Amino acid sequence: MKTRIPLLLLALAGAGMAAAQTPAASAATAAPAPAPGARWTLDDCIGFAQRNNTDVQKQAIQVEQSTNDLSTARFSRLPDLNASVGYNASFGRSTGDDNTYRSENLQTGSFDLSASMPLFQGLRINRTIRGEKLNLSAAVEDLDRAREDVAVNVMTLYLQVLYNKELVGIAERQLALSTQQADRSRSLAEAGKQPESAVYESLALQANDALTLTQARNDLQLALLDLSQAINRESAAGFDIVEPALDSLLDSALEPHPLSVGAVYDYAAENRPHIRAERVRLAGYENSVRLARADLYPSLMLRGGFGTGLYSSMNMDFWPQFRKNSSEFIGLSLNVPIFNRRATRNNIRSAQLSVRRQQLTLLHAEQTLRKEIEQAWYNAEAAAAKYRSATAALASAEVAFTYEQQKADAGRSTVFDFNDAKTRMEKAAAELAQAKYETVFRRKILDYYRGEPLTL
Image (cartoon, rainbow, N blue to C red; front, side, top):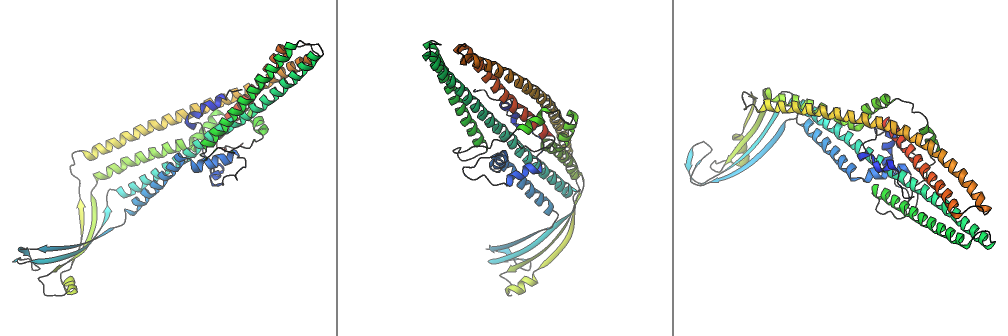
């Protein structure tokens, strides 16, 4: 009864088997947490986890940072404006207001205002803005991926809780049967139809089933604790989940998938955040090549300024000096790159190598995605076949137990035979429960690849 679902042990290898986050699933992040004492649905758990998961929060901060960087790049088109104020006290020979040296103590002040604006920089500003836009897009995709990972992990643990709840129900039914058998053995022993030893054997069986039930309840509490911690609740006290009806989902999971493996991959390759992020990064690296080439072109700047000076040697008030000594200028500066020790050429080469490396990263991500989808496809089919076999096995075990129970009622069955039939039925029921949740889980993952939300 302590067995855990094999699919849950996968933990999805870092939740890499999720598909694109849909608007419906994203909307769950805005829903409030359930009231104290209320049971949590899967949507409640996913929404709460996505709001409180530290990885999601860090990625959200990265989106804000990328937005800020894009704003900086956009404002780089505007001219800059700078002002400076200075004061000097000179002793001995110093330059006066008439630009001659004087042997006297002199106090001078200055005020300068300057501005510059880039007119042409080899399209560097445009390409920088485009690069920051691509960085922002990649950050948004990474945020969707982080939310996606959280959703899949929460659903995994949610199904584990449901599975453990079903194991508790199986253990309770087995304890009820062993209790009936103990009462029956006691009655048969009192009637002289069974030896007294059969009573003690039945009581031992009852005690063993009670222990199994206790272990199943402990496993359920641990599963609830795992889920509570995964969604970052402060405490697991009083935490419980809604047990949804899975009949319709199970019926759908047992039907052939409406799409082919190729069709599921085509959709996932276009919509899965991980793949979209890698493609955006590739576009960003390609833009970096063009940005590096901007250093090959001349740059043209427009400059202008205003300045004035104040001198203690001038027999004039502040404002008259300010106006008399003022000057303005405007001009253009052209910077033509001729030789910079091949730094620009090497920067372009490095950017081109980054493009090739990102192309391989994207190719690897697409190949991995195809492998995951193919594995998910065949795992879903295998899980459905396993569920059908487990259903037939349980039906046979129940029939065998019914016959054995009838024999026990008539006093023609030993405790060993009864326990053997009951154990086989218990094992078949546990395997069916495992197969049921595995079938639902694998089909939900396959459907999630094609854009369906994670709901139960």
